[in-house]
Length: 340
Length: 274
Image (cartoon, rainbow over all chains, first blue to last red; front, side, top):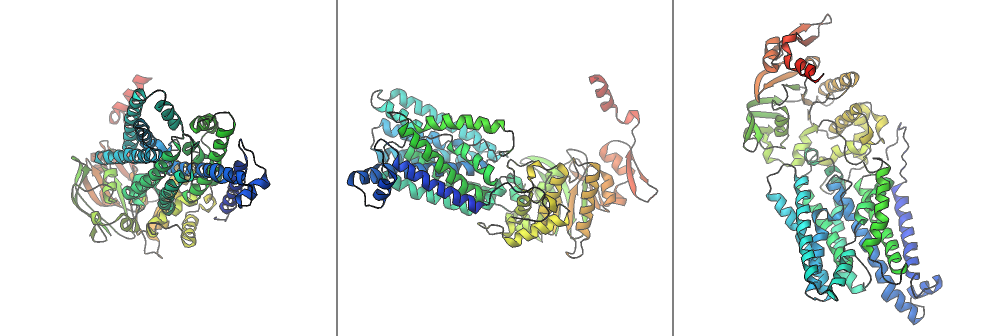
């Protein structure tokens, strides 16, 4: 960091220390989450099972039930927070969440259509992914055909329109769905859950998320410049159209992949980047990894609560909203500081 | 460096101005003057290649600007917009570093050398103490200086400034004008070219600038300030009687005549509201 005669001492902890600390916290959280559950394990049992030296039953619980779920929670949380941070920088608005361009609405429609047609799980996930990608693809296509000076506003407005249309189609399918068999599945999916997750479910989503993160990480400096606005970014030498398209494609790929895996989990992508920004400032090179780490930890905690606080699974979307909404009000009440 | 030839400017089918010619090179200050809505901002956007010309051509370094990439343009022209608040609390140094973008690869990050250049630029403008301050919480004058530092860090031979003194207090205006003069006269760098727009004709005298006096999207007069900024020209362009007078120290100042008949609408409006 620049030194010199600065009077304000940076309150931001050094990024490497922070990232390292977050990684350690995350590892501890993950270990604890593996221990916690109906079949409760002691730390020694867990360690033994992880190293393949535990008893048979503990190993099955750890490797087949807990670990896939913990990994999925980490992946989904990290992905949603990273996508949220990207969309917020791109749309220059701290109130933006990853579903701003209709990716969740599209993925929701895809999944609901899959459930409605009684497709197998893998096909439902595929159709959710395709629905999410198609919704955003359609939004960017329509926006590019518009002769409107304000690209960003056009994108957001068309995103709202397409989201509303997809939502209407989803509602129609819900009305037509079998109320005893399909409707509960649809409702549960639309609120997000990792209840039935297996390693086979995670494997297709993981590379997609990693592929999406690569351009975001590479373009981290240009994403900062984009948040100054189109005109200024162009004057500073950024090919705005191309860069924005790449960022939207990457963030949408990430969001669609994990939405296909976990259903519609709200609030993570909206709230987590704010916390990260408070810690490391808006510079995207720091914001992206820190958002992803905090998002991973947050969703791991929420998912562990979801499977332990009640006899039945609580949908993730309900918990993220119950925790996220008051937190967001608190953020707003703090004034512009930190998220302005 | 930058030439405009028989330029027609505007948006889509709406023409805002036509027949505009200008030349800007190192060490020169070109001052754009004209009433609100005369096309100054549209002309700027066209000169920066942000808006396509309706006809005519903008040549940058002898090549049409429309045939150059954004990075190529940004290495030749730096743009200082009117100071505004960004949505996120970047540090002032980060904002200045953004000026380095055109010198980095598509996936590049500013490095130690870029940081040194940015710090040098901030030092030069006397704002080294702002380095780690939150840009979104600086005063208008400080932000303007940060944006000028960013243009310096961009290391472009030409700087385009959109009303750099708008919304600045009296002291900050003078400070920014002094910096502009020193940019153009900087001998080490052969002097940068500066194009700026302003609403204050006195500034053109203070900067000893070339002036393009615009009216209704066309060039009303073009040349050195002392030739262009005459009482007759200013009166014709702004629609009020203006006289140009010499102060005892030899500076020229433009004085609108504020007799009752010269500003009837304002006064009667004010009275009606009261």
